[in-house]
Amino acid sequence: MSPRVFSSPDELFDAVGTELGCSQWTLIDQARVDMFADATDDHQWIHVDPDRAAAGPFGATIAHGYLTLAITNKFLPEIIRVDGASLGINYGVNKVRFPQAVTVGSLVRGRATLTACDPIPGGVQTVITMVVEIENEAKPACVSESVSRFMR
Figure 1 (cartoon, one colour):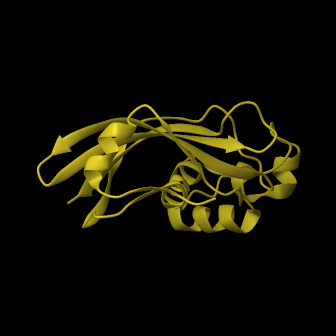
Figure 2: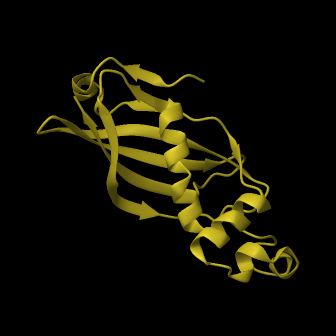
């Protein structure tokens, strides 16, 4: 899958309301979860103790919600590319929900829709609704409204 390419930040205005596409599938393995736990000092057993988690509510260790959110930063450049931008900035997130846990061993991908595009001095600000899908699951792992700025 190739990213949807926009020739300039201003071209984004015409795409508001459209689905931009999907990222590649990414494996959420225990090593990734453990590295995130180390980076954030969040070593709760549900994330890092496979033996204890096997008897827990999900039957396995699960990814941190914030790991699921953070991986959307990997997905965005797989889905969208804005040529002619001097700089792209992650400006924040308006809203985040975690409808379903991601068990270790799952494949996830991002599906993005351009929700809004507004002019700002020197560029545009976008809101991209990112849905993190779990392979073979009906409910998404994460739904977020990612705010980005693309400067001319």
